[in-house]
Image (cartoon, rainbow, N blue to C red; front, side, top):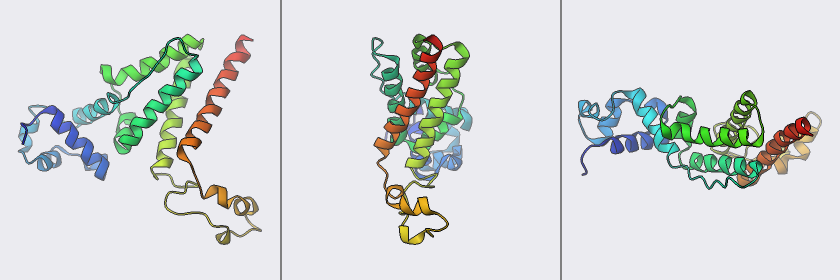
Length: 210
């Protein structure tokens, strides 16, 4: 077995979060999973809060950006959103930890810096760029919650909506659209929503500068 290290501790925490959720994390539980004494963890991580920060940093450090500064800002933010979504698919529960932490490390701030730089370069003002950035984060996280089944309403994760189960007099549209509500291509759905969001933001910019 390799010697205890910060990397092993963080990896164990990520594994536990993905299996049981962030509420399961404690220094004692991580020590038990690693087969070491709990006090030995404190030589590498001072406390649970620092451990969760380290989890967030580890997850964010896996984001692979293929940014092209010469590309249109619309394409750049699209690539950034997809990159965040991809890492969220790899670590869905840990991503919820990421969005709950206020990271001040380079790993935590780099994705934010890239997004804000892209939006500022497109011509958005300071306050406007921050608001748009938050809208993108809300969209990506909301999409992830649906995809992993945390919010299953109208997302066919645990079962399909059947027309036979719907009273057509009370809910005529739901009954008629049941076949569509019962299927979902998450990749296509994400890109569709992302295109709508980018088009709306681009329209806002064009309306102001036109």
